[in-house]
Image (cartoon, rainbow, N blue to C red; front, side):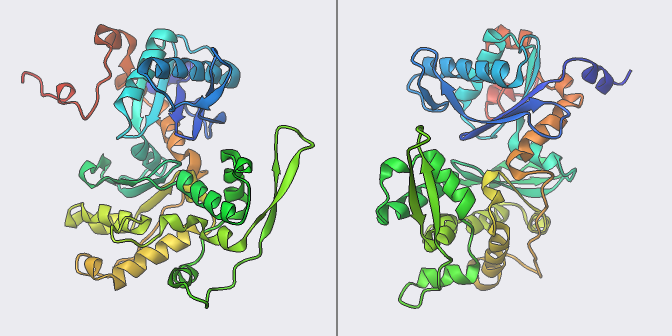
Length: 382
């Protein structure tokens, strides 16, 4: 009997992607997550709600993961995690502490049978069934760029910066407070609603005119009114979202600086860190994932910026050769759960049987093997 038949005859593995802002959860071999929930935990001791990654001690982190997973399994998925297989989609450079605590919670507290940790960039690329691409993940807390060639991540060319959804929210909040809006009205949920419903990425030409300043600024788009609702349904307030804010909120990702760390520079620097023979392939196969890549106008603006730098910037002009045109892969489904979808595909293959960390293996020394740990990657006999 083929091994994939035995996999699907059992209970399907649970697939988790725990992000800074949102968590996607569902089952292997399904086309979309069952739920996408905020990465927030309601503490059983106090009843307060807080972000999962806000903690002071390791013991506090452990307790928060327990409460968080408890709600995922029994309130959202409605399944028992006991003797279940898990696929966890994670950032390759994510914190080791969180990885270790998550494994301990799954194995010791919830009695999981095995856990397979898979890298987010490779899983996203697996949805396209192509071996080579430059994967750009625009998330909430950071934007990361990982080149993948022939199915292998080029770790030395990995780049990341701390602009993403959180930086855009901070810019929206700053501009609204300058217009007189009270800070108490601008919660994280309200800022996200304003970003998603009213803001867009402006064109390259208009951004250049805004950057020059002066009196000849382009005419902004019309302002819109946004209703801010509180917990009391009768208590709501109307705020004005200026047109200039609507089209400049995302400029934090494209701002020119001496550090040359904007999103286009981040992509070009990552490609330059790769060997010459793979650069053309990466230029022609860029793949945007993450919730931050779904905003209107981002793809067109990014492509224009990249082509402009290749032609006009002397630093890149002397290092990239030939007639290069940036090309982008379209995502399968929505970009905000592309990596989860790759994990669901992986969970339906024999990898969940052959590459997972089994419970018995973990309990011997309570350690999760890590690619960055030399002790875990030492050749046999050395």
